[in-house]
Image (tube, rainbow, N blue to C red; front, side, top):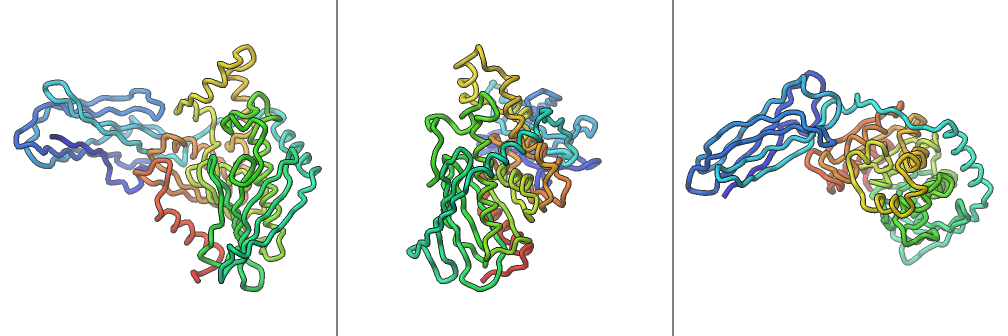
Length: 403
């Protein structure tokens, strides 16, 4: 009988300082009768803390109705908010919808969680990586070639002497080319891209992903493997894997070392920030809906059974304090200030997996040239138009045109 949809005229759902914050609800009364009830507006922080409620008695005639709601400017500080509209019928049932909006997210402040030995930890870890010979191996895959690119399987050794692999596509055209490192989301298998322009492309799988070797604890989710201490944590090795991949790509004779980029989504978005932070000659960094950002806030906004189960398995030695200490070494908020690349970050405003406030926590630490895109209705996946935008963005930065 009744449909209800909340929205805002702000194209990306983000409001800036002194801008009127207005949302509206479209209500469709599909019945042939009037419907009486209460329209209830609720505003909460993104962590669910209640801020305000507004209630109005309304009578809906058959057809379409719009109800606007202006949020008092003094109510919102910097951050993200949940706005919910509920229609409660006179007989008690409820129809509702909600959306997240943002207010001045680029001013969001985050307290860093670096331990005193943070810099030494990464210096020591990279030193251990350099002690392992990469033993690069390149195998041409003629069955995967096309008229524009040759395709190669690349194999190398990384931290813990694990063997990791990826797919290298080299343009047939002569000369040096810009280069793109593609890194995967959580559990994703990277495969050749067949790029739409002349660019050396390395689609890389770190440990546990695709055609790369796994760790010994392959029955556990990546983010809880070795979580008891930083030196055993999964992401210590995974971060070194993607750094070794960028080192390989940037040193290829076909690559213009001044024109290197890294691109990934979710976990790959976090990897992209890490590569840009620890390989500061990287020229461009594209981080889509990045994971591995602001763990403290992340666990205030999300809940994961894997983490809860990991804690209760050994309660005598595991607790939130120790957990957060380990994670702090891998939190991109603590690395982002090192980035010198131009950064493009994109987020889904309705993303429950990597909430936008966590993404902005890392983004706001970046001191280099940067920009962001917010997709108002998107969750943890972005549609094809976004990927076309990124390809065009890369082409413009690389000075290339479609073939």
